[in-house]
Image 1 (cartoon, rainbow, N blue to C red):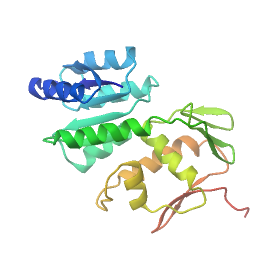
Image 2 (image 1 turned 135 degrees about the horizontal axis):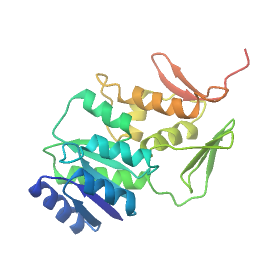
Image 3 (image 1 turned 90 degrees about the vertical axis):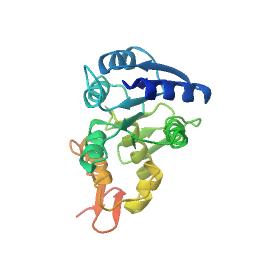
Image 4 (image 1 turned 180 degrees about the vertical axis):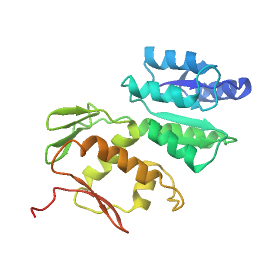
Length: 226
């Protein structure tokens, strides 16, 4: 497994590189956003650990460019900023997880491994509802034959909904299964993620498959005829 670290603080960057290398990963380290973006787009990584506050190009811009170029590898944000709006902004740009500084290396390692597990599958399996199809082996989503590009987190969310289609999934379950976190009612992380997913798989198609059940959660299903 190959990981790109984009971190301008010398001690933090060296610490991450050494720790992840000793944990069995191949690692590259970039000290600013421009170099980090270049490496992310030109090399083949399994995950990016990305600081938000970077010289030359900040983490938001790096992430946005990675997603706009069609790269769907998992991205873990590292930042000293712990505001809800910052976490939401990261998810809207396509981040897969968010870790606030200072952090314990053991927690970072657990999050890295969780993201990498979700990015791999050893089974050939198709999940589908109506004309929406998710190919687990190829990590590909199509609807009505049209390719839909999802972030790793959006893919995991859609996979969960499809595996349990017809079942209303509470926000607490989605939070634990997709984000490996306890549900915090003061954040709208899940609502943002569902809205982004719905925009990609429902907005331009009929029928609408992802439904919000007020006060309960979300479900994916074929709607009954009126």
